[in-house]
Every structure is written in C-alpha cells, then in structure tokens.
Amino acid sequence: MALAHDPLWPRAGGWPAFDEIDGTTDASILGIPAHLTSLSPTGAHATPAAVREALARYSATLVGPPAVDLDEALRIVDAGDVVDPDGPEGEARVRERVAALAARTGLIVAIGGDNSITFPVTRGAGASGLITLDAHFDLRDGVSNGSPVRRLVADGFDGRRIVQVGIADFANSVAYARRAEEYGITVITLDEARRRGPADVMSEALEIAGGVSGSIHLDIDVDVCDRSVAPGCPASVPGGLAAWELRALVREAASDPRVRSADIAEVDATADAPDGRTVRLAALCVLELLSGRVKA
Image (cartoon, rainbow, N blue to C red; front, side, top):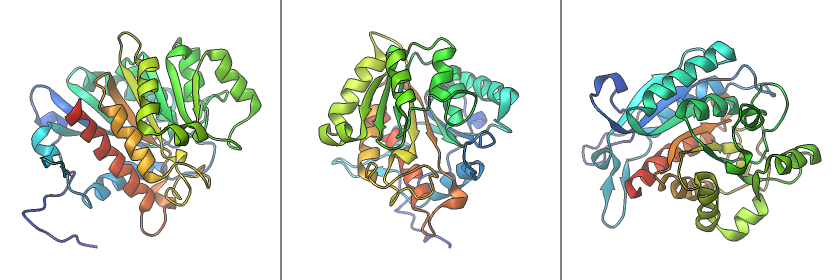
C-alpha cells in the first residue's frame, strides 16, 4: 500500500549509503540476514529488508519538548547487508564488516536475522560487555541461534560482564540456568524486570556490563516480548514484555555512550501477523536506539 506524502511530515529511513559519506557517522544500519543455523524453521533472512520498509511508516521525530528530528540531530547511514552471513566464512564477513564500521561510527545497529548474529557482531565491534534482552539464556552447545552467549564465553568473553534481562520461566532449563550461574552471568528475570521497571533494570545492567571502562553490545531478541505483540518471533510466549517495556529498555541502553553496537534479532518477517506488528516493533527498536544517541 502506497503511503501518503506530506512534505511537512518526513518519514524515517531512506538514509544515505555508508560509502557515500566521508568522515565519521553517529549511527550505521547494517543488515545481517542469518537464518541457516536456526533451531526452528525461520524466514529471518527476509527481515532486514522488511524492517527498512517498515521504517517509512514512522517519522524520525521525538516530540519533546522541544521536538527533535533525528535526521537533523544525527548523521545516520545505511551500510547495506552482509551477503551470506551464515557459517564460518559468513561470520568472518560479519566480523570484518562490523569492525570496519566501528572505526567510523558511534553506534552500529545490526538488523537480523536470527540470534546467531550476536556472536560475530559482538566480536567485530570489540565489545567487552554484553546485555541481552531475551527470554532465553542462549547457552546451548553447538552453533545455532541458541548458542551465541555460550560461544562468546568459550571464546574468552568474561561472563561477569554479561547481563541477561527478561529470562523467562518455562522457556529454559535447569541445566542452562546453572550454566549461567557457573559463568558468573547476572540474570534479571522477566518478573524482576517487570517489577523494577526499565530505568532501574538498565542502570544496573549498564554498570555491570560496562565496568570501569569498555564498550557494550546490546542484543535485542524480540522474542522477549509477549506473543500478542511479537507473533513473528518463533519462540515468543504469552506473558512476555509489553512493546513499551522493550522500547523503554532499548532507549535507556542506547543513552549510554558505552553501548557501541546492538543487534535486533529473531524476527521472522515471513511469519508475522497480517498487520506486520512484529516487524514494525523491530523498526521502532531501530528508532529507539537512535533516540538514545540524542541523549548520549
């Protein structure tokens, strides 16, 4: 459906290509359509393009007061997609591309793709701390969308600099809960996150993941949300976070300059509701990340 045109209401997205811009940028958008190692069938490779299309449904305006146009306040670019990001060679391409972007941009926003992208993006960005917004530990053995956190620890990442927010009952196992404890990971359950609120939870997470110094990667697994707002996430369950809670957590995280990279994962655009609500929520997470940089 064609969207209405109003010159006084510019739409979000449509940012210039990274290679067309000289010098540094405030934020770079990067598509990573990984999907081949997913534990459940997924069409997540279609999601980066769908999120870019959905961005046009929104403005880039913070109403304030005073009102702020993100496109005027920030230098935002689109770095395109990493081709064939699955497997060892694909992950190497992701790491190389992310590292190149990190040298010239303040915040990398990686649009997945499944949650396997968290491993190469975190490593490519050179992050020393990790915050996950996820219903699941992602501590499985092997290489899949269920294993990126374990892979990071196995690769030398300090588990004491990892905070997992939104871990849900009936979505994990005792074995992986014990593994998280063994690794020294800080776990803030779904119930605790809801009771304490986004600002308090994210303040603690940033302090732990950021440490005295160092950069943080933020993993936004949209299946942390209630299935009513994220039906396009194969593993979302009834009773997860509300859409506003996820958006508030994301903006709180991005307002800290130590957050230098983020991924938005586990949205299957081909399995979304007819109204596209999951993809639209992912697009709003992109805008919330950018909004945080205005505050940072």
